[in-house]
Image 1: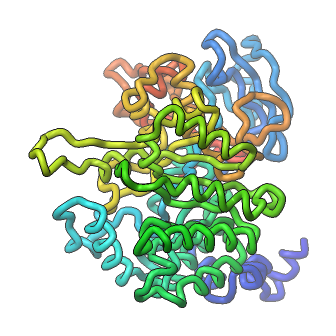
Image 2: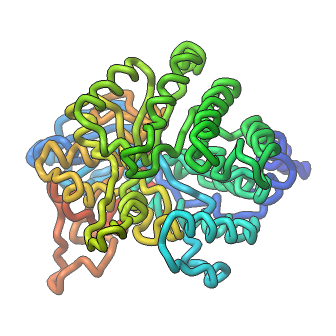
Length: 496
């Protein structure tokens, strides 16, 4: 009533609240953008679902209110379809699972290889230094329009695949300053009814080494961390000039995250050099010295890439687990990027064999009791030209990558891109793998009935459609995003 009264007197309450939270420029852009309005359907009952860890013969009826599950009862098929309420979704024995999550994805440099604006920035060598160079050139051309356009592509495609939360990295440095962050804040607001977007202010450029970003870069990062809507500090110690500065970067990152009460996310140990020290061990040491558990107010530490750790012996793994103790440290493997970048040929012997490395996350969890997940990282740029926004493509890749084809293994692979990914980025409200009262109603429904709308290309001539009945089948061969439905806080997203 208050909003309507103010509207009649020429005052847009939502716009004024956005101005107070984000400032005039972002608020004006939000008001002008219509993409925030998306059809949603409140779901009060999901009828006849098969929970992803249960047998296909076990079906459930789920009631939902205020974005949470309020009841789970055994399904009875006696109620006729014609008598179902409009807020009841009859899912017909389809698999329901926790929604998907991007624990690590770069929002600002996605789809650079798909955008004609950057068509001259072609990959020639395909190595890390070239990727840095090409991305730096692209960043010099970033505008709000193209950051918003590419960001919408990524979020929209992700939500269609079943993603309801993500940790999105946006770079802040003396080159782009707050361009990427400003776009990220607007996208976070525009998609708030479809996806919980954590923004990570990310220092891709060296913070402490001499260069264009020093010494002002660190101050710029701290200014960004004071902005409303920023959740995480991210840094890349390995881009610093030497080992001493890498360690100083870790010192700065841990201290700064604690200072501003943010989660910490580090790109770390991105090499396969047995002579290089593992910086992850130093992060653990600094986090303990700074008494992270006591001083962080429950915030998490994520270590991404960490390909150097694939060279660890069993003894070294046990040692790092012992040193972590109760620290809330999570490892996030980024296999599409790791396999592309960690594939240097052995030039000295002219060998055709390429040694590749990505964290063996299942083994880290099952054998060493560590916390882990896997993430997409980059989409359509020089760091990772291949792949898409669908986390299920990673889970499916994991079957071969980790030799994980059993029922138990496929359930774990699914959790890597859903509940365990959410736990890694601190979203405990949506990280339960159990179907029970009180959990957040964030789900993805895999498949459609034969008379449902969906991707007609998956139908045969007689109108039938192959339906995956178990999570094993879904992980082995994920259905098209067109044959999935995303539910966020109890609302079915009808159009992404």
